[in-house]
Image (cartoon, rainbow, N blue to C red; front, top):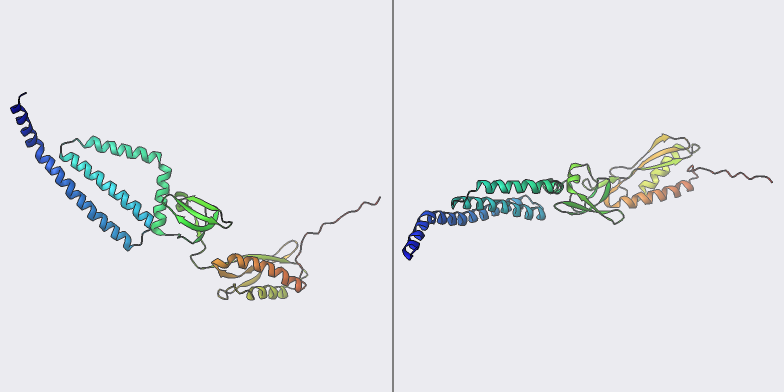
Length: 270
């Protein structure tokens, strides 16, 4: 092939593929600009709705990649590349990855739901999946709690979003449920007065809602009283422990017996 043949072949290629190549370049430039504009609009919408920062970054990155993959397929189709098999290959790869990461995708979806609907937030005291703790961090795949004994608890977001969540912080107050038993010989009215005095004298027991003291049941060896003070969420354990201690002290002062099992020793006479 002589020089003229090379030149003719080159011109033929330019005539055949030149317009397609120029169109592909223009599509890439315009498409990239459109993607930037769309991402900017999506980011603005997320900011206006106070999306979680980690969720916002992840979603923007994911949307960006989806748009770019679509743009690449369009550009390849413009220059004449068969994109049907290419798209099918991407779909098959996506399905395979999805099957392999089924649990992780479920956790990701759960994380998205938690961040969008916000049933919990950092600092909340919650009970979920058999665990109680303060929410320390909400990530894409897991949520971290600090347990009551200062242990770290990690719960997958899939299980967290699909299970029951008890949020003790939302209302701002908690009721402390206590039960105290006294002897059948004790005067019920006097016992109620003593127990109520313990509640009303504690500085962290709220006046509204009012604390209550009621006879709960007539048990085998004791009359049991349901003692129900209210307090702020952060004061729960202070109230729980103080009321338990003070109740014992005040019942002793009033001469009201708290029944307990008595062991009987049998001495053999030798």
